[in-house]
Structure formats: C-alpha cells, structure tokens
Image 1: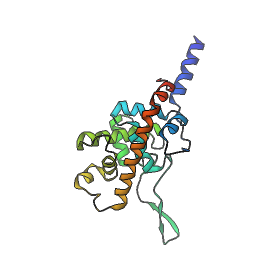
Image 2: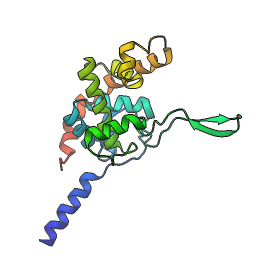
Image 3: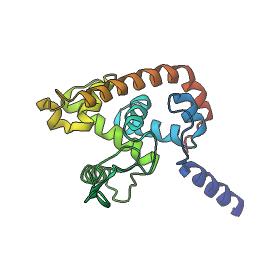
Image 4: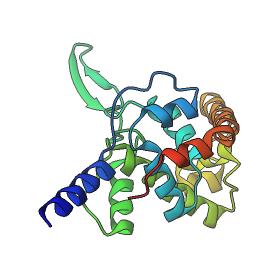
Length: 200
C-alpha cells in the first residue's frame, strides 16, 4: 500500500513538472516541445480546454516574450537617469496585462494562476484566442488577425486601431509566419510527441 501511494505521488509530481528553461531554438517547434519538459502536455491541455492549437500558442508567445518567462516592458526614465514606471503591467510568456489575466482567472475559477508559468500562459493564450475565434469569427489558422486582436483587444480590432501602425502590422505578419512554420513542423513530429506524452 505504501509503495502504491509512493508511485502515485511520484506520478503526480512528474505530471505537474513544467520547466521554465530558456529555449535553445525558438524556430523549431519540435525541438521546443521535445526539450522543454511538460510544454507539450500543457499546450495540448490548453487546446482541449479552449480550442487554439499549439502552433498558435507558440507563435503568439514567441512574438510577445521570445519565450522569456520573466519578460516585462522596459522601465521609462525620470530626468533621463532614474528608473521610472513600466509602460504597462504586461508580464510573462504571454505578456498578459494584469487586468486581462484577472479576467482569465475568473473564467478558470482560480486566482492562483501564474503569468510566468508556461502551462498557465499557454492556457491563457488559448483562452483569449478562443474568444476572438467565437466573437470575431477569426479562424485559428489566421494567426495574423489573432495577434492583432490579442495586441489591440477585441474592441480595438473591431475599430481597426491597428491600421497605419506599420510596426504592429509587421509583427502580426511575423506571427503568421511563425504559426505556419510551427504547424508544418508539428505535422511531422506530433505523433512522436504524443508517444512520449503520458497523459497523467
């Protein structure tokens, strides 16, 4: 009995382990998921819960944070010397604003989620894009439009607030390129990833 409880406890610990180690090659989705412990499990769980595929989750997080779990906007300067306030409350893999993150926590019914944990960030991106998919009719394959709605908010997207913002439009095009590359890569390796994934 004690041995059985030990095995179950070890299994639960393994299932909960998700690394925040730096990503060696941000352009290779297969390598990312093969080397970052727990990320594939987290991305697939987010897809099952909300609908957004792993390729879209990765594409948005790559653009937002470069897979840096502790990413934040830079601080401004006071009198060109002293550190000032940050431009926004964005933080973590998904660069989620505090207010939007709190909305997500209410949707999950859990106020203990963490913006610098990959599992929670992937779930957040999938949650947000699932609402854009439902309310704005954006297909999950249209990563460019999803990123514009993610960056500007759904109201801003409806108003076309991104028009004339060349740097944002370029970023959205990069997200589409990342998404398409990741999706093609995952088509080749998802069966291998699924074999190595123990769905605890």
